Length: 267
Image (tube, rainbow, N blue to C red; front, side, top):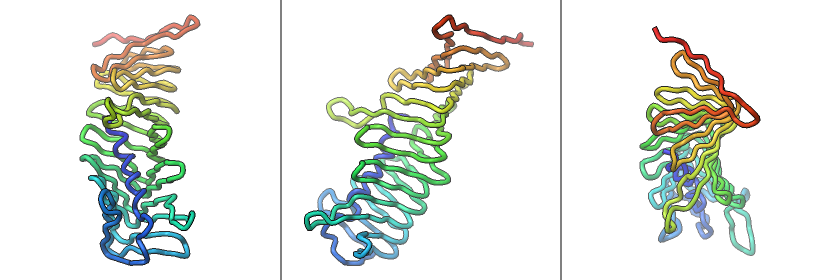
């Protein structure tokens, strides 16, 4: 599932061509902008050029589509500035009932913003979530994509669910890399901070922070670690959780740290 984290957030980049220079002052119900590789805009209530505010705005069930990516919202707004006699879009907003889809995956929230100068995309909302064919990601505060830094971030009680396995933390940060021979960008590592909770069919593991290596399918949790299985509990400094098999291994850590456990007899 983690390898699908990037494509959904990257959909916000499609907004970057919402209203390219040259759209003119026309107001339309439907518009196709940019020619080959351009973006198709549809809106129930019109597409407007607000010259005094230096904005283009699509109203009413507005939809932007490009290369299989679709952004739908109550309103889509492009903010531009004048540079050397041309319009330069520097920010794109999607407001109200935002849904972003591509490749069978879907992200939803109340508002999406793409800051073009910083190349940062942010999705926020009350019921913020991302659903793919392999799992679900939710967060209370935001889902973010930082293009130049090649990271994607889920903030605020961030939760990844895949079948019967869960990874939860205050913040989850996915580090991205290009695929082989310039192929699709993929997630290579996820850092979990702000309190970590990992559950498998057999174990519950908690700690202060953790790192999940995607290729190995292993999560290392450190800092006041507890492993709970049925009525038994083990305490240590670090634990390695195999997310594929569900097996957990506890370590005492350096400086003479010891592993402690409470094992109760079964009836």
